[in-house]
Image (tube, rainbow, N blue to C red; front, side, top):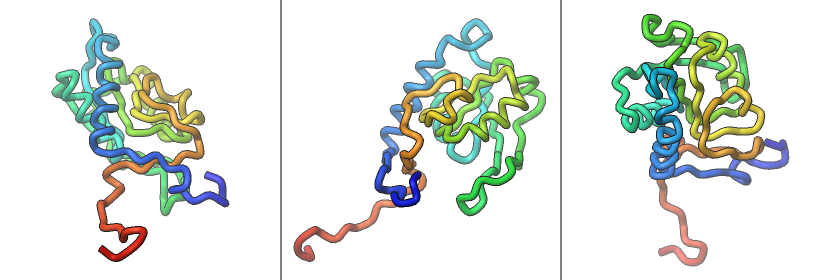
Length: 168
């Protein structure tokens, strides 16, 4: 994002309905492409943004093994050291073969690059992708420009807006 432009000036607002549709589209794109006769062993959502799409992908593909990996790389909007605060269950992960790792967005790609080193044979899927992060993701649905700010539905709240003219 350029310093003279606020995030909302090039914003991409995602509704809950749109997130659901795009996550289902991601599941359909992944269906039949796993290494186990087209199937997948488990879905791992990267917290927090990857939880919603991971759940939808698991539902659509009838996967019952769902886990999470918690990564912290931001502190007060500053990128810092990448740290795993909660790993997925070791006995299902191995080197990642047959595992879908799902996130909402790949931005710079640093988080996925870090997780890919841990699970090199996993399949990385995101709903949205920015150009800098695309090399780290195997499957995605929608690409947005690097300077687009995505407003996810879990980050937004509905509120009253005063009419342009008048007070009622």
